[in-house]
Length: 444
Figure (cartoon, rainbow, N blue to C red):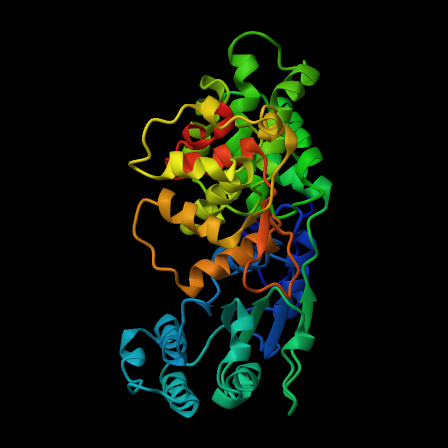
């Protein structure tokens, strides 16, 4: 571990900083060099950019807290107005009395005036730092705010430095009228080796460091090509570690038998890859889903929660109705969807060309009016035939769950085919508590 060195700070504090910033010692050292000694004037503004979870906020928070530097950390997401931004800065530097001096709708000049008044009463002994997180939101605020923050040191005549943290480059910030140019500092993405080093520090106390490191190596081998977000990888590591340890807890393998451990965890990691970044379910719900899939026979595997969640409620029933229209003969609709249809035996419907299973013959085209008739029969509530229903049919075609087989100029009676499998429609049906097997002619 590289040690940070700076003449203005104690070595003990710098050592604590280095311990909390693995693989970011170079960036922390550059920042210290730019900031200079505490009592010296620092550069008016610094712009730090890098992808999500590259350590920007963490490095700044550790440096400012461990070195005990006066600072105000402002989240541009939480500060929905400039009044909140000004209030938070004054509150951090001068206390609640100074923040209360702001008018109800303060302007930039009000903030500068109050700041200068407070500085005359309590001048800065050390450089004050204002850290703006998610600074890209500042582009959508008043046009004068960002240029003023960049040269705030000049406006308030105080030893203050504004540090902007962003996920996008400075070129997208620069106003057309020009502004004071900040110093730029890039935080690159973590390499695979650096991610391995950082994630291995989160090891479980019940297992050896080598065992947890081998698990992280397996995890990165699967996810590194699609996800390099440290926070997401940390979440995935915590979520799947119990599954990785199952053969070990049962006494089936030893810690050194990496190949058998890999074969056990591989299908679960591949399934987790389908929901990277989505967080559609909590960690507890994910574990319950895993247990349910193992206990229930015949449960559909390999589908993520994404399959069910993304379709709106009525779109699911439209897809169910389309599947029934594609695989049931039209003459059976009366039997399935009318209450008083009388007793009709299946053999009465059979003809020579219907003795073969419709699922073997493939989906058949159906007109729009038949689709809507079945939809209104199976949906469990009264639905008005609004434009929303028709737009959802178009969305299903766009998603390639339905296929339009008629010409585009045939507006009066368009025809469609259902393009999903039986397993897929069964999974969709379960999410709306609809037993589709009772309505399929082939399974009577």
